[in-house]
Image 1: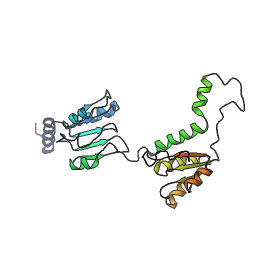
Image 2: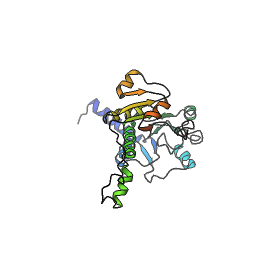
Image 3: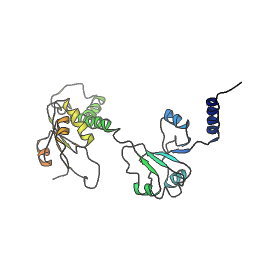
Image 4: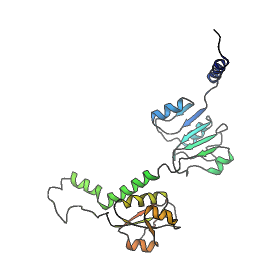
Length: 243
């Protein structure tokens, strides 16, 4: 039977692929089984579905055997962990942040670093607004109150009624992407939004989230509710203190 040149080429490619070993990668923490199965189609995967955090020596040894790694914030990628990683090309962080990456050390080792910027902006804003609602409306306290059987007699003064959010003033300290996301959610409750930030937003961004810039002192004087949307750093420690 005759075969076409294209068919012969396809068979040659398949034969080559069959002989070529798959690149080895490390999946340092447990991931969803379907994601792991997808990776296994193209890679020889060293996985950690037991989800035990690797020690620094275990991580160093694992990186020495792979061409790529999928890690989380629990894996510190620095000069020590990269010391024997001669074939490592890329380390991908399942995270928006990359505080666990020593970027200069990775650059010196010729290892590409990747993260997942922006994917959790709206998700975190949801959580931030949920925390605001839970605090103002005393949701957790009320749930405990109901389970303790204290709901039998309604009382104006003894029931955990909480505070209204609608048409109140929300003060946001830290107006990055997440702060702006919380501000937009507040608009649905008819809230007045004021904010304080190291630098004022562009007018268009202020308009988009319906927020007005004020000093920190003015914010604390006039806001009914205050939300902090700041990275936890030594400078931001006790942003709200006794003074």
